[in-house]
Length: 153
Image 1 (cartoon, rainbow, N blue to C red):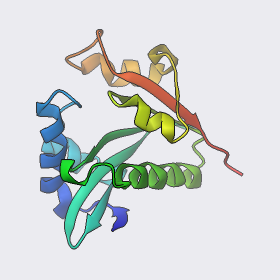
Image 2 (cartoon, rainbow, N blue to C red; image 1 turned 30 degrees about the vertical axis):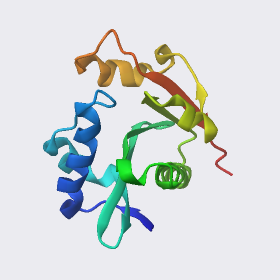
Image 3 (cartoon, helix red, strand yellow; image 1 turned 180 degrees about the vertical axis):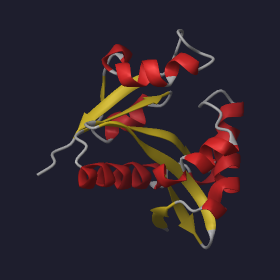
């Protein structure tokens, strides 16, 4: 298995993967156009030419980024793929000089095991007013907000 930056040729598999979870109410749906537009945010875990998982590190501000659209094929769950994506994303954030990374999730325990701590969504005004306001669940979001602060030195 390898983690790598996503390519345009990965979009169809990523779209199916993410929207499979969206159909079950476990994450927000992502249109293809969004995946193409933000392809540089995404990484994938690949094995034998097959995408097993994907996720994005989206820069929100000079000191803040979000891990989002994290999804792993169900048959490959609990094999460290999600962890690989998050760790790759945290390393990328560190190399960019971004000290705070957050996520909104229905799986807070996964992120807590990686060092994230739960915080109030109101602590993320950049997210709330830039993107959440357009979400069909706004203002009744039922996702949990977690963050991690990384040392840059």
